[in-house]
Length: 482
Picture 1: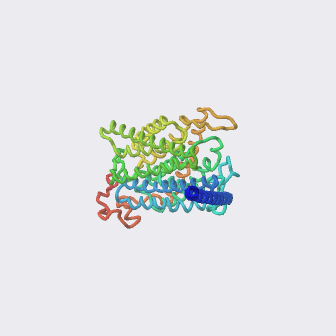
Picture 2: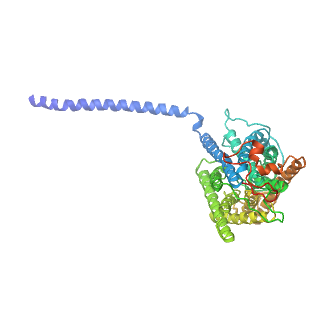
C-alpha cells in the first residue's frame, strides 16, 4: 500500500497539470474563435475607403496637391530670375507683377478660365466650350471615376495658368505701365491661355487630331513666350538698350545670385510641373512613370545648361553664367511636351538642342534689336516650339487617328500643325491687345519715368534702401540704368 500511495502522490500532480492545461487550451480556442468572428464581422462592415478606388483617390489627390505647390513655388523662381537680370530700380515692379499674375490669374481662372479649359464631353473635338464658373466640390461623392479631387485639379491647373502669364513679365520688364500689365495678365489667364489649353487638354480639336503635349511645352511655355515676344515688339526696347546706329548696349543684371537662385527654384518646381502631369500616381506602373518623367526632365535640363555654357565659352572666350542658366531652363522647356515618351538618349539630345536654340535665339534677338531682358522668348517661345516638334521626332506614343496608328512622319506633321496654331493664336491676340493699349497711350511709361525707375514712379518705394532715384544721365539713347 505504501508503494501505491507513493505512485499516486507522484502521478496525481501530473494529472492535475494536464487537466488544467487542457482547460486553458479550450479557453484559448474559444477566445481565438471569438476574435476571428469579430474580425470577420469588422471586415464585412469596413468603410468603403478600404476599397482600391478610394485608396487611389487619396494618393492621387495628395500627390497632385504637393505637385501643385511645387508649380506654385515656380512663381518665386520667375520673380527671382526677373529681378536678378533687370535693374535694381525696377525690382518692386517686377515682384508686384509676379504677385498679381498669381492673384488675378487664380480669380479669373476660377470664374472664366477653368470652365473654358475643361468644358466637358459635350465639346469633345471642338474649338470652344464653357462649363460654367467655380469648382464643383466632390466631398459628398468623391470623383472615383477620375481618381482625384476636383479642388486639387483646379489648384494644379490654376498654377499652370499663372506660369503662362508670368513668362511675359520678364520680356516687358522696365518699361510697361503696371495698369497695362494687369489688363494683359487678366486677358491671358482668363481667355487666351484657357481657350488654347482646351484645344489639347480639354479634349478639343487638336487633341482629337492626336496632338501630344504632356505638360505644356507648347500649351504653357510657347504661349507665354509668344505673348512676351508680342509685348517686346510693340513696346520697343528699353532706353539705352541700343545706340542710335543700332549697336547693342548690354544692360548688366543687378544681381546674378538672385537670377541663379531663381533658376534653381524653377528647376525644383519643374518636378511638380512634369511628373505632376502624370495626374494618377497610385500603383506600380504610375509610380514608375512619374519617376521616369523626373529622370528625363533632369537629363534635358542638365544637357541644356552644359551646351549653352560651352557655346558661350567658345563665343565670348569666357563661360557666361546667364547663358548657362537660360540653357538649363531651355532644356527643361524642351522636354516638357515629351518627358513621358522619349528615351534617355533622346532626352539628352532634346536638352542639347535646346541649349543651342537658346544661345542662337538670344543672339538673333540682339541682332534684330528686340529687347527681351531675361530671354523669355528664346527660353519659352523657341524651346517651347522645339518641345512640340521634338515630340513628333522622338516620341514613341504614336497616336491613333480615325482608328489607325499614324506613322512617325504623320506624328511630326500633327505636332507641327498644332504648334503653329497655338503659337499663332497667342502671338496674334496678344499683339492686337498690346497695340490697342499703345494706341490709347496706356502701354509704356514716359521716358523720364523709365529712367527714374518704375519702383518709385509706379509704386512709390525702392526695393533697397540704398537705391537712389537715378544715378545715371537722363539723355535718351545713352543711359545705362542701375
